[in-house]
Amino acid sequence: MPPRSSAQPEFIEVNRSELRQNQSSLLKKAKGRTVLVISAPQEGEEKIILDRDYFDDMAAKLRAAIETLAITTDKRLFSRILAAAETLDADVRKNKLHSFSEAFGAK
Image (tube, rainbow, N blue to C red; front, top):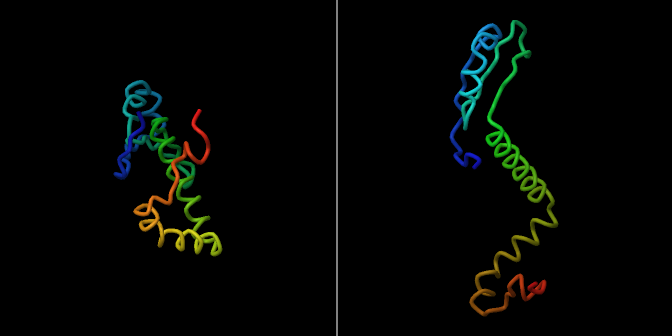
């Protein structure tokens, strides 16, 4: 199951020699939000190793943030959403809303 914590990742820094010598034990440490950072002599040449579930979770959060940003920057769409939100509570109380099965047909 992917980690759902919004906590910051924990970084373990190793150099390439350490990684070669202790690869198995170091790779086992890259679980959850623990990230291995493989240092390099040149700035910007560092590499990281991270848990696949953690990566997938971060990628999903990034996609959601991008979609949210796209919606909020579309003035026409965002104003329509805000207008609908103002009447939503009243519509629920008046039973004006339909369920998904009513709207799209239950199968």
